[in-house]
Amino acid sequence: MSEISKKRKIAILTSGGDAPGMNNVIHAVYKTVKAMNSEKQTNKNLSPEEKKPWELLLIKGGYQGILKKEIFEIDDYWKQLITNSTKIGGTILGSARFKAFEEEETRKKAKRILDEFGVGVLIAVGGDGTFAGLQKLSELGIQCIGIPGTIDNDVVSTDVTIGFDTALNTVVEAIDRIRDTSNSHSRISIVEVMGRHCGDLAIHAAVNADLVATPGNPKIPEHELINIVKDLHHKQSLSSIVVLVTENLYDVKKLAKNIEQELKVETRATVLGQIQRGGAPSASDRYLATMMGIFAVEQADKKGDSSVIIALQGNKLTVLPIHVALSMQRSDRSAAVSKILRLSGIFYKK
Ligand code: F6P
Image (tube, rainbow, N blue to C red; front, side, top):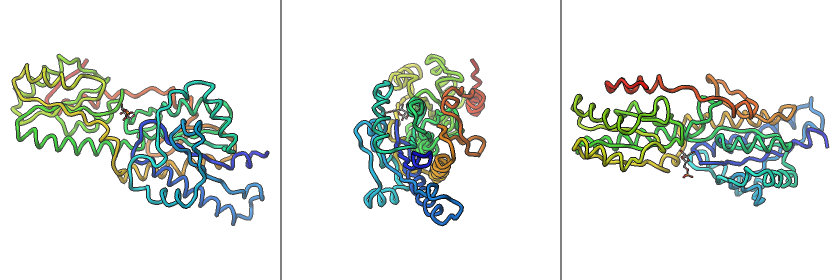
């Protein structure tokens, strides 16, 4: 089989925690494949082989969907779903965290199934966990293209991930609501934000809060955090104090109790949880997702079969070999955190 025939089927899946904008990627990939196919038909410079249309297959339920052979051609049902999905959150393909994909045997089986369906290129939307799976799959001889989609913004190779902007807006709206009720009752509120081990959601939302604590840069020990809240309360006579913390740092219910005991001020803790993952994608996420989807198909259509991750770097879309993207180090956020804390008159350095 020639290189072109081999590459004629692209499959797409979404994996890991869902993120608003994933549907926009699927939509952009679908539309780009369609447009490319009709352009090729009218291009007189292409050989019959090169004119062969691309075919897009959909995989449901992430990597697990490959093993379950949940691989579909696009019929009228899917066409309608894809077309109507651009303004809705979640992912129409479904997603999963599939531990078994870390095992070589599972990946080999997945490769055999992809071969059976004639898939030459696999596009996966997700985070670093998804990309680690892609890297291993590409080593088995399938061209893989990763698109960063996660609300956490923890994919180091890209300036921003699909879903981050929407989640950030959800967090800010939640903080504003919590602020209203905290003001009315002169309370202290602790708000736990997602991010896994990345503080970006909390840091970006923190300009609307009084204090922020993130996993690194620096991580504030609990007793010091309580002292800072105490200081804020005594020195600044604020009608309320809103403290944002990234998940996995403190037991926020306990933290609220300890603050209440120490300061004798009513304190409540709110864990925003999965509410941050849902909702219609923001305009910004729709745009980013669409551009990345288009770019992914353009990469697939290029000669060669390099496996890459798509990234936005300094406002420009680019590609990086998967292993390079995965080995990049997170940049230090401490300067931003210090500046935000300084707005509240807190000078915290560790
Ligand atoms: O990666 C996205 C994310 O929402 C993280 O912020 C969070 O730690 C995790 O997923 C929660 O996953 P689940 O919904 O499976 O509990």
